Structure formats: C-alpha cells, structure tokens
Length: 555
Image (tube, rainbow, N blue to C red):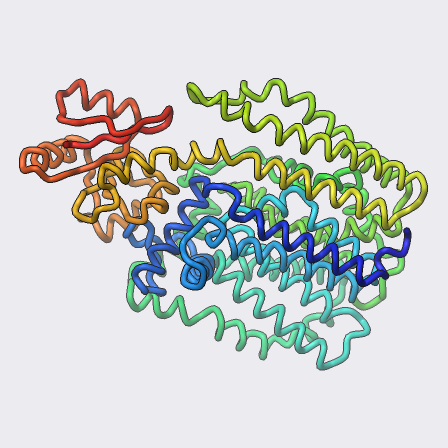
C-alpha cells in the first residue's frame, strides 16, 4: 500500500473519477450572486451581442476586469448553450488544470510520489475545490498562475535540457500573459515579485540568464497586448480607469470599501488547506531548509517565496477579498506533499486527527444551523441543508479515523489517498447541499411570476429600483434599467448616463406616465421601497415577493 503512486491504473482511475465528479457537479447549483451572476451575465451579453472587445454588464460598459473569463464563458455558451454548468465550465477546467499541472511539476521536480501527493493535496484542499465550482475570476487567474509556477519549476530544475528549459519557460511566459488577461497586471507583478525575492534569498543570480527573457517578452506581448489596444481604441476612457483606478487606487485606497482585518488571508490560508492543516506550518517551515536541495536551483524555497509573497502582498492591500489568496494553494500543495513524503509520522497523525475533529464539529453544528438564517422564513432552507452537512461531517470523521489508522501503520500512500478522498467528498457534499439557499439568494423562485407578468417580452420595461440582482438578470436573459443604483456601474454610467434613472422620484414619474398610457412596466426592488411606493399611492401590483426582494407591476 506504499506503492500506490506507482500503479498507473489506480492513478488514472483517481484522476478520471475526480474530473468526472468535479465537472458533473458544476450544474448542480444555481448561480449565486454577486460574482457568479455577474460573470455569467457579462458572457451572456457578449454571446448575444457578438461584441468580443467591449465588455458590458447589464448593457453598460464594464471595465473593472480583463476579458478572459468573459471570453471563455461566452465560448462555452456558444458551444453548449446557456446554463449553470456552462457558466462554470471555465473555472472547473482551470481547477482541474491546476491539479494536473501541480502533479506533473511535483513529479518532474521532486519525484513520482511527491507529484502523486501534490495532486491529491490540491485536489482535496477545501478552498481550491470550492473555488473551482464557482464562476469567478479568482480560479481563472489561479489556473493561469499555476501554469506559470509549474512551468518555471520544471524549466529551472538542474537536469532540464536546453530545449526543455526554453519550451517550459515559454509556457511560463504564456501563463503570465493569460493571467494578465484574467485579472490584470497582478498576473505579471506577482510572479515577478516572487522571482526577485527568490533571487535575493537564494543568491541564484544566474536564474535571470535562464528565463529566455527576449523570447518570453515577445510571446507575452503577443498574447496580452491585442485586446488592450483594441478596447482602448474603441473606448478611450478604458485605459486610465483600468490601469490606474482598478490597480493602484484599489491597492492603495479604501474607496472600494473592501477592507478587512490584516490577518484575514492567514486565516483563509489555514481554513482553505483543510484537511491538510495539521502539516501546514511544518511544510512551510521545511521549505526554507536547504536539506537535500541542489546548489543551483532551490524549488522548495521558490515555493515558499511564492506562498509568502502573495499572502503578504494582499495583506498590505487596502482591498481584501477572499479569492485573492487562491493562487498560493498549488505552492502550498507541493510543499505539503514534500513534507508528507519526508516528514514525521506524528505530523500525519495530527493531520488525520484534526480532520476527524472537524467532522465532529460539523456534526455538533447541524442541530443549530437554522440559527444561521438572516431573513424571515429562511430557517427552513438551513434545515434542508442539515442532511448535507451531516453527511460531510460523517465523511470527514470516518476519513480522519481511517487516515489515523493508516498513519500509525506507516501506510503513507493509503493515508494520503483516504484523507484526500474524504476532504474532496466533504467539500462537494457541502457545496451541492447549498442549493436551496443559493436559489433564494439568486431569486430564481421569482422567475415564474416575472415571466408570467411579461418580463421576457422586450416591449415590457423592467426596472431595478435601489437594487441590482446579479443572478436574476442572467436568468431573465435581458438587461434591466437601473434606478437609484450605481455602485460598480458608476464609471460605465458616466459614459452612458441615458441607461439609468438617478432618483426614485424620476422613476415614479415615468412609471405613472406609462401606467396612464397603458404601457407595461415591471420593477424589482427591496421590500421597504415597495412598501414606501404603496404609501405614496403609486399605482402598482405586487407580482411576487420573498424576504429579500419584491416584484411589482404597473398594470
């Protein structure tokens, strides 16, 4: 049982099963706002309009992010039609790609067992698995950055041939270019910063001669530049907003209101590493040691710098969102895999024990889950979620106990496989079971009434008053007219002010005029706004409502 990594049939069976489950459950949940609805709707509008240069959200120019995610989602819609799994396909494939690349890099740089472990660790880490099932930019960026990291590791290892080094370094440069198209300059700044600090700590100055910089830069600009040129020519306002406001201002200023405690990314790193949290610190510490590493290139030090620099970089930023930390996990997986191979039995036993305790914690939490409901009447949704959390807790408890037994028996391969399966299965159970709550957050329960009232008819005006429902707009299949709401649309509405009504009184005037003329209008709004309009005597009929939103009509 300590040679499972050598069994190709077993390895391929695991990979195929992992890929099948990962991709199958992409369609098991409704798209949850804000991110999933936003990026699905941007792709739907690109697919519908045929404009693959100017990115739009709700029909409004939207330049906060580059287009790679939107392109891939629109391509998925083109090939497979509109739907939930189609909207998540790109992120699912990026998650799968990251696991495969991490396994390949581990094998080529450290050996077959560590490569086997690295793929299992990443493919079962809570945060990597969860984010691979969510339509957001972070997994797309992380997939491309994993390509850069793994290609760099393979290219720079001491026994790499000249042609092999060149080809893998070009793959690294391509990964950085795609990272820039995924989320901006961060795709170049982060790998560049890692390389600088690695050079300082390792004193491996010669690495700069092995980067194929000239060829790499040519490839980088060939991939990354064309869209920025084309979008800037069509939209002269885009370059300053994107490069200055969305990069320097977001990092240095607090105007985006995305501040968080300084320790948030350290907490996410720990929680996201489950079920491997028991060896996380030891693995990072071991990365700084030179034991057994070649004198020229130090891959474990490179991995440690990758994890530390990215974590500290975003810790310093005034804009902190949970997904920012995601690119570190392939580096963490490789360091953890190395420790699982060479570390102590005690570390493995602690890891298994903590996983079993996490299972117990989930079981204890189940009876109190209804208290998590924040809106009236939603306690029943958390009650429906209880069996899934219960199942996840049982899986983690059993998996942790079995892994503890195998750790005691020094069955390393079996220990890693069992713990990885438990971590992956537990995460998937909690994700799939979230669907009833996700449906309410997305507002899809209102869709039948909306469509019955004519919301799908282009002749019927649909307003969004004081609110913007990211997912509901995608499922309606049409943009809405914003009323008294700007938020992330502010820059686009400065360019296209005719696409909004700035105040509720202006909306009421138009609403009354349309009602008098027999023109049908529908509005999605917050319950308190709908109640206020009723008190004002505004002609309206409540079409549908839940605890979060109300749909009204003027007919």
